Length: 529
Ligand code: GLN
Image (cartoon, rainbow, N blue to C red; front, side, top):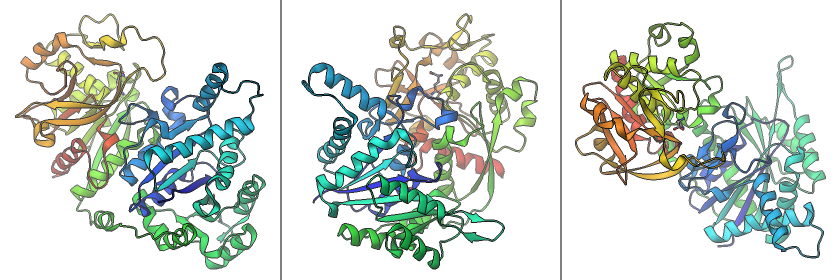
């Protein structure tokens, strides 16, 4: 089949949900092999070196790539395992161009943004389509039209239409339809203006998706159609909904399937039944969960953790209320029992550095001693081991050498292969690894003999202390293939006390929630009583 290219751009504002919109378009096309790409404008090679508070979570792929958090949406919606190469950044692009220039690939030429850089971008898209045998390339251009840093991507996407033929390209533009409080009227002006910006760049959108609190009324659709040179049926609402998994349903109801099918000249039969059944459940009760950390100010820093909770909730049939607990408050004297009052389950997610650590350790202790379901993710496992070492094994002052290099008991220590690492970019232990799960453990009930999980860390449980800690009753239930790095722990006799060095939230989906979250939520529901 001739590959079709769907280009998704955004206008007016950031944060309109372009990643979800792209993923939802892909979900409607699930009968085809859809390959998502994201084109980011920043000069970092990857987001691994960025602050998650500013940029959102760093998503880690099975191949070890650190990529934009939109890849989380793509994997959750499209059922594909994405690759690092599918996330272009201007950092990557310029790095490659510079290498080519030094090698002499452009000998005799003046290397320019146009044609050289745009050709490189276009070629990357075409090459990906070919290597992956994509039936549909779903290309999301980061940022909003008019941002300087995305101009080259937009130009490359404009050129693409000539290269592959207009019948194979669909331009989708996501905009914002405000409703003015005073008059309660939906306004189209920002959409007209952003579409003008796009048209100045030689792209006329085929489909306009307007993010709005209410369905865009027919009159306004006609007006947008007239001003923006699209068909009225091609103006689609992206309605505010309480769950991102409902967005494909909204798009389908708004007629996006038909318009895409007609414009790309291919049959589209979305299969949404499974999600429909899962989203329709009537929850029996609401469970209160705490996520404890230092990035709690911004949900986006823990986007996949939140999604994994939602996946489990749909299967366990419960509502979940998430409470963000700032662990520095506990350090500064807030009693932990007060901070966790009424919680049916507690998560300590991944993190770095020493801020809030003592607070997190108190949180773990409180959960262990009071039979509150506890799930530790990455740092959350290391801190659980530190807590156990201090309070059960009597290793006073036990710590991670990340926090205190002079501790008498470095129960968490740098991975040996990290000792000589000096550069910060893409140098952690990254990506998917097979974990061997110990028979007779709860983890074994959940995973069987082998679990494939994803990682992003530099430190590990120090092998020198494992025997002593295990003798006091903490079970190390999953090890790396070479049996050295400890990947999972659990505490027998506790309703749910489990932690992993991995990030199970990265491989959770609505169809199949991550077992760590699924079992955790069952325990939290039981805790609710
Ligand atoms: N800071 C810890 C480490 O590097 C944990 C990392 C994480 O939680 N992702 O090992």
